Image (cartoon, rainbow, N blue to C red; front, side, top):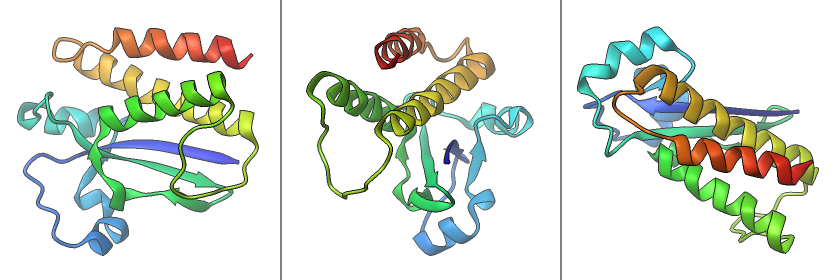
Length: 145
């Protein structure tokens, strides 16, 4: 139903054409579960500015793709804020409207965030600490049950 993937931008990558980023993502990004790919870019990474992208599809239809790349750890933090708002207030802010199964959507986002922060921690534990984010994810998972 939902597919959520996180990517880190290859260091020193210069984006000049967003269409090219979408059509040829492997030239620009490494998927966070690709351990060998992550190790290949490790020495050039700036852990204070982790550019990357989150791709979100619903039944194969893209809702979020590479053209919305930014500081990917911060994108995940914003998404977790949105999940928190939905759980606390019943709604989050909106720019684009979608009709989706609420719980399945929130679970997919939480799983995507967990995958991102876990892969980053496993691959780069000496350079980044995402323990707060991972604890927050556990709390959000409990609230969704």
